[in-house]
Image 1: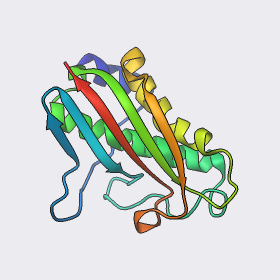
Image 2 (image 1 turned 135 degrees about the horizontal axis):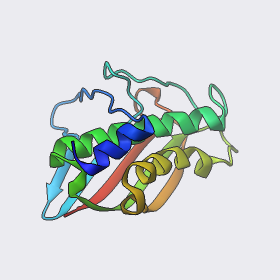
Image 3 (image 1 turned 90 degrees about the horizontal axis):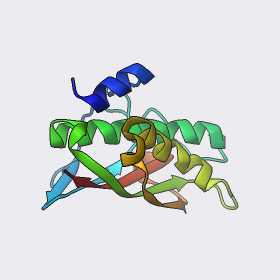
Image 4 (image 1 turned 135 degrees about the vertical axis):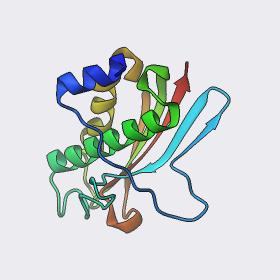
Amino acid sequence: MNNAEMWLKDLGIEFPAIRMKGVGVVPYKIVDDLLMLGGVAPVDENGELAFTGRVGAEYTAEEGYQAARLAGLNALRIINDALGTLDRVDYVVKAMVLVSAVPGFEDIYRVADGFSDVLTEALGERGVHARNAVGASTLHNNAPVVCDVFVKIR
């Protein structure tokens, strides 16, 4: 077990299982020393959405935060699968968190913090990143959040 994985275990964070769907779509792409993940959603251990609906309607900002946090755990799992170990993460470069919310919902950034917080908790200073947090009227399969992340590989 590597250092980052031991740290996650100490925090009580476990990787949920990932099952990706779609033809012609992969969970990640590596180009040179950059790992790019796209479309990471809050899926459960069966690969099904654990949350469906919009923040501000079906979910509060705190529940949206938890959905984004689960998406962050899924991103860590994909990163670990792609690199073989989280220790190969040099640093997280940038994340984008899309939040499906009702018109006028102003706490998009609070929801997006769930994704950012889990990356920083797991990776420490290496998890600190630039981020866009964007509101959307709807996302694929009615997910409340969908996240992208770029990682610099050691």
